[in-house]
Length: 139
Image 1 (cartoon, one colour):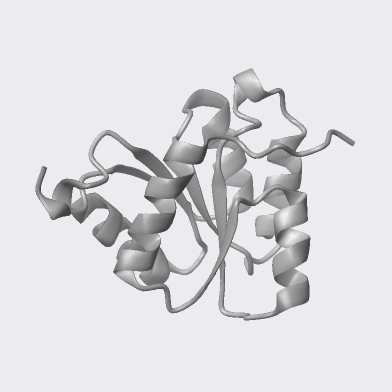
Image 2 (image 1 turned 90 degrees about the horizontal axis):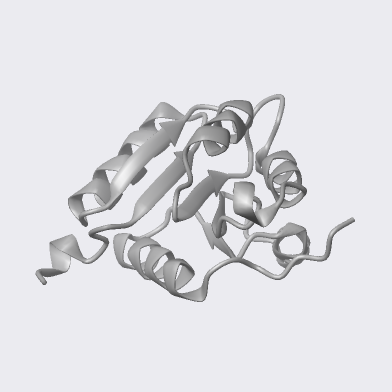
C-alpha cells in the first residue's frame, strides 16, 4: 500500500472550532486515505457519535462553551457498545504536563501539541486504531 493510503479504511472524527485547523486536519487525514467527518463543536461531535462510530477522534481542547474535556467526559460515560470507548487524541496549543496528565486521566489516549506534524498525526491515528479503547474507570 502506498504511504499516502496508510490510513485507508479508518474513519476519523475531527472536532475543532477553528476552520483553518479543521481543514488542515481533514486534508491531511483524507490524503492519507481515511474517511473524515468533521464537527465544529463538542456538542455536535457528541451528537454525531450517537449515529456514527468513528475509529478515532481528534479533539481540540480549547473550544468555546463546551471544550474537549467536556466531550471526552460525556463520551466516557456512554456504554462502550454505544461509542463510549472510541479512541481519542487531545490536540492543544498548550504544552503542559499537568494538563496532559489530566486529559489522559479523563480518557484521552494521547495528547498532541499544535502545530502537529503530519507524520506524528498519522502515527497517532494508526496506533489508536490498533490499541483500541482506553480502560477508563466509570464514575
